[in-house]
Length: 449
Image (cartoon, rainbow, N blue to C red; front, side, top):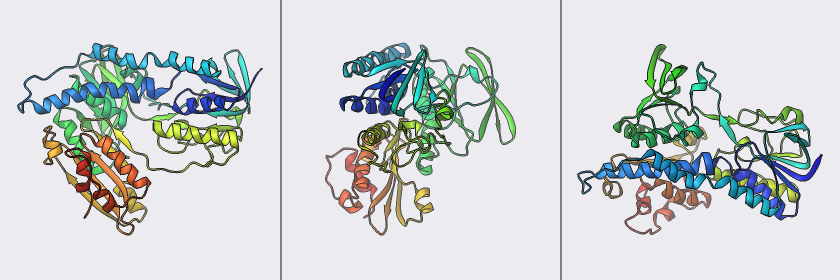
């Protein structure tokens, strides 16, 4: 039996934050992961995805300017792009392990499973600790359809040695939309099959509608109310069967990507042995991010049932957990304005309440919505699809929601986040001078007088 003060399961942003700060406080720490150390974002998610998006953005911008001073459109060399991507991802595991070793954190590779309320088994080793932190993140949701084994997930897509000619994305969320843009700009024919009535359901419906038009303009097919029922065939020659309006359809493709949502990564942990309860969104925790059913267990990041599955929140939650472990439960999880972006082209970004959420809460808001392809910032790069929607509380005059579509909006949304967090009035924000001409200088035109 190996005894520690703290065991951390998962080496992403949340788990690494907890382990490092615990060790810096002099605690004996063990960290476990069944996957290469470093977590999803840096190796199989945000970071490599944004590298690919960067190449797609060059294609999009060049295409928009053909006939406007640009004469030759570049093309993506997929193998070269993947080689470049690997310069970011390949060093992560070793770099992470070296950092843990330098700090004196004992690392274990393998599947962790509880053998009692305070012990965890990894291979032949059994570990015991006063506190155990779960930071295992999410994994693709099972589709439970015939031929499911023929699909690849987001990890597989981000490691494709060659991009096939035809791709089907199953799902209508972040992953499907972002990968669709990357693939389409690299020359693939892309079809999105989404079983819901509208894609990107957590985002503003009006802006999503404009984004859908942008996607269709470059040949991406988006099929709504389309439920995938089976995938058949062999490698590179696949058929996807789906139903739409009670009718059966099929589409032929070279590749099918699972982008239909993710679920908590806990199946192998044996949480029932430790008496740790799990809900639909993750491990059930209290305001201290402590398991509601096993007081020595904490959960942070995507595996916990608090907040959105975003990397900044994972680090935020990790800091809460380690503070509570070291100093007793004193820091509570607080909902904080958290911006999110969908890295399509154009980019979609959001923070705060949607119009639907504001009405559901009974908030009286001034809604300002406009398509902005005729604004200078869009015309300068010949961007045909851009828009915004802002929500201002009519009583407090504070901004309660901002939704942006277009180039630069993933940076401008941070200004709105700052305003919402610090309760800056719409008037004060609108009267702030920004460098001109920039996307930030458009901000005053997005707010009511």
